[in-house]
Amino acid sequence: MRKILFVQPTSSSFMNIDFSILQQIHPTDRINLHQACKKRYLLSLLKLFLSAWKLLRYELIVTWFGDYHSALLAWLCKLLRRKMILFIGGYDAVWYPQQGIGVYTKPFRSKFTRYAVTHADLLIANHESLIEFTNTYIDGTAKKSGLKNIVPGFKTPYRIIYNGIDTDKRLTTSYPKQKNMVLTVGSTPTWIDVYNKGYDLLIAAARLLTDYQFVFVNVEESWLERMEQEFHYRALPNLEIHSFIPQTELYELYSKASIYAQPSLSEGMPNALAEAMLYECVPVGSNVAGIPTVIDKYGVVIDKRDAAQLAQAIQKASEMDSGPSGAQFIRTRFSLEIRRQQVADAVLSLLSD
Image 1 (spheres, helix red, strand yellow):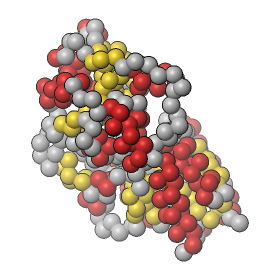
Image 2: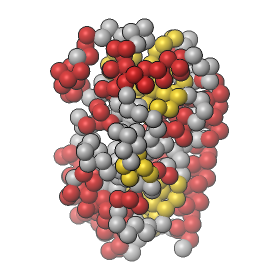
Image 3: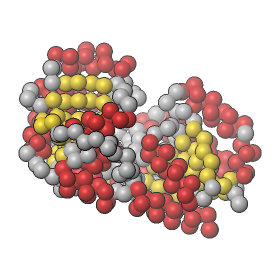
Image 4: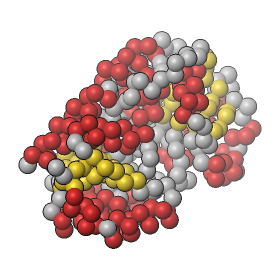
């Protein structure tokens, strides 16, 4: 029996979850390309190309994100007559040139992504907005996004399968909620991500809400000096920034925070937001892509990228008692079992063709 090969660009937890799902469906091997390190990523791509004949032992190739690696895999699959599933997750389905957001803002990288998207046998997007969406949050104007608006002649078969949240990954010890503690978790591999995740807006909101404690997690240490120069955040006694913390400490922060904020410019289906709600944080987020889908009626959604509106939303969230019901909503709506069943159906359907 031929196997599945899962090629993951990074070691992100949601990719590890999908690998475990694939293993339950069919014998599966995996390769990690270490995309976070450009040198290792390029060497991994070269190694993949030079050992392409090894792909013949696999019946199906599965990978995350439209990018250089998925373009190479799509080309090799066509050459070797193998099938490929491409998971679409966010930056590979948006194009906001004025903000510099999305792979399509870079012409060379854009060509590879378009090739991957149009030559995969099946796309699995974690939210409908990645296929077609109009973003009015950024500056009030209608900005078309999603693959149908970005990729000319887009005809690739696709399915919408929401991310699954591992509800078992919880602390055995619970911590009392700290009133008015606002938590935000969002990585910033590039400087534009500081704006994309809304950290500048949150700093402005922290100036307005001096009786609230703001905590940021996963801000790259290399950007802190520039953030200080542009936003003067160190003058704020109610703001704490962590570049990296262990997973158990992150869960502690989820447990302690009363509010979780996600005022992003662009998103797919945000896992951190769902995880925070699982810990009974009341969510505040922008009206972008999967954010309002996850928040539903259990938090506050803002329609305008404005610090005053964000501050008002945080105040409103602090008065809500929807944490427990929001946690139950996440368990029911975004369980791992739902994703497992839907991914299994997609994979087995493609293998049987």
